[in-house]
Amino acid sequence: MPNQVPTPGQQAARRLLAAVQGGRFPHACFVACPDSAYGEALCRQAAALWCMGQPAPDRLLTWPDYTELGEAAIPVDQIRELTAALQKRPFMAGKRCVYIRNAHAMSEIVQNALLKTLEEPPADVLFLLSGNENGLLPTIRSRCVRFLYPGPTLGEIQARLEESGAPKKDAALYAAWGGTWSRAKRLFDQPDYRSLRQEAQSLLKALLSGGLPLDRLGEISKEGEEAAMFMLSLLRDILDYKQGLPPAENPEQEQEIARLAGRLDNRQITALIQLLAEGLERLASHASTQASFTSLFTQIAEEIA
Image (cartoon, rainbow, N blue to C red):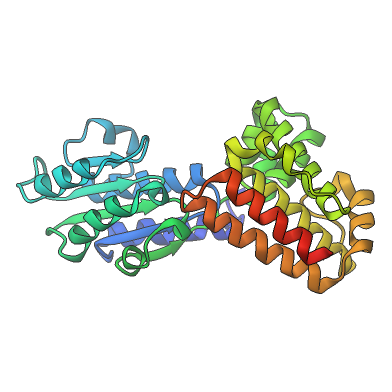
């Protein structure tokens, strides 16, 4: 449809790429996107434009002036070696790019080593970072321009899932459950991930019903952030239901959501959402998953007692 209005995500992507192409770009940018796969794809497009003058991210793997980190843990020596390499002349046209995926996973020591380079960046070097900004030091965040990329709409996610082979009804559910393309695609592809969602929400329901199932926390500790996100989606639906709105993220659980909404008042639900959001921040900053959930569940039990 040539006259279709671009979505907010498409508009945001175009603004970023236009800024890079026009040379109106800061030396460091943090791309905040709720969908990691889309955020990473956008960063690579921006990097290709910066380095080569064309949006050809497939060529980046062999481009000598492009460095991508974050697939595995980044040791501090790697940042020091990178800093030294950036002081040398570039191999190609004079523009270089460093893209750090999963920037929140960098240790404090590594972030501080990177900070020295961000404070005094070499000429014509673009730093791109993506991930969970809550895991970054305030000093790193202050050196980066924050770029918000909303990612695809639920309708776009559902359409892509259907293109991948998901039945229409399942695609609609996975899009609602996941909220992002990455999570929705995992829910479609991986039965274990669907089980994680079910177990995480089952634990939260037991807790909200007066239990304290600490003995079951080990089952969700391997993917603590994902489990917490699924719990948070259920609480948001409970709060929406209290306001007279149908559950948007877990529509198949409306009867159970109605039951839980009857047990809690708005103040309690809002407080629980805040507790879970703070718990997510601790998990993003490498805190012990088991200990974080134990503390979180204890706080929730105290809040609803």
